[in-house]
Length: 489
Image (cartoon, rainbow, N blue to C red):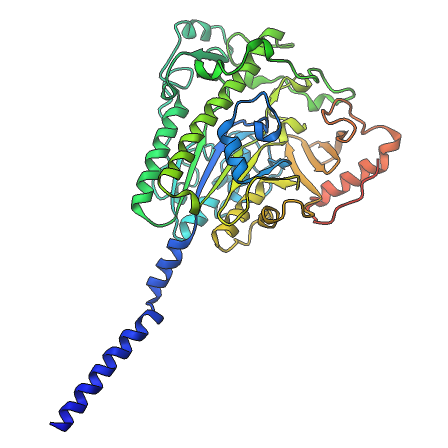
């Protein structure tokens, strides 16, 4: 009996000891699951052709209350620059985290997986580390680009009709016959609901996905790519009505920059594909004002769609643990330098907005730190606690989020066509070369004296040493040190 009693006591003690120790030694898979659950979600919002012309960037005429609200809760990058001012190339560079070159990420048809084979893209990296990744709308230019990086097939809204929506105005087909590529008018104000056009349906799908992902559990990476304000400038009438047409003005630099080389100026061919736009020469002033009005309306329309996502994040109690980033894939010209669209090395094409709100980052601030779009990949990795792939050429801007006024990069580099361009704190310098890398032309703009880039001063004798130094920085590349250079004119 005594032996049996001691055996029972020993067994009970063992059970109690195991119970006490169990919480201290979770199985490895449970530990990994707990870590995965604690990681922040990512709402990754791309906006096609979005200039930094928003209320939160100081443009009071633009009605963008929802992006402005996000900015008040996050960080606004006032000097962020795309790598290539055309959609396919810009997106491929951003999603791979590597720089463009003369033969890589060249035009709007660029594929990330073809131009950079073997490179792990941003979405793939997040999926490889336990995130459920979803693509809605225009994220990569080609919806099947890097398809393995999405947890389910990339989705895009039905874009029936010439004007990218279910609504087609009575005169569209007739007007399309007069355009160079069979397209309808470049703008339209239809008295229809938001979901008559593609971006309204895109917002509906993204909201439904947020609900689904909330129920599913686990961290998610939800990419939503809005099409507007890309041409054509079609948006429901209520967004056009936010602006008085008589208040719409042409840009002050609605002319070619003095001494700009011919290679810097293009014919705005993307716009001239639409009916009612002349094939050569200047766009008539009233047509130009209608285009600008339409662009503003489309910005407000997209702003309203983004609001639906932000509001749903709040409703689902996901906002506190979700990184939200909004970026425009490149800038856009609204008549500046006589140009429309992008496809050039001027500030209006290279500069594009980044707004980010992240858990643990105090909001309501702006930064003037020079930032490149290849910095987005490593920054999201750091915010999510993921390792950084070795191939990345950008630099995480998380330190800049925590201290927006700290010293940062000395330059941002980009390119388009035969031009390579560098933006420093004060200057933009562009070097044009031929296929053998021999110089053919150059531009230099002093943003302290000439922020609208109206006079090319590259050939002034007093600027010879400065131009040479900037060319050397560009060739080295590529001006990414953190030391603040002392620039002299």
